[in-house]
View (cartoon, helix red, strand yellow):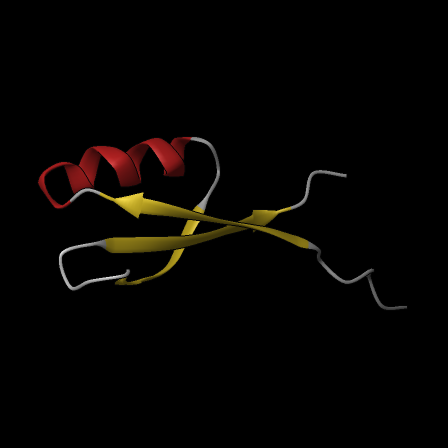
Length: 56
């Protein structure tokens, strides 16, 4: 018997270069897992993508 598929919720957030660790630690405390970081509208802006299982 297979278990039901895990469902995810996603979040994108700006990432301030001078405060990266604190920002990532805060999201981690809330159960968010970092998926990737990419540049935003310009090379000086970073955007972090997170996921976590949906709480049933």
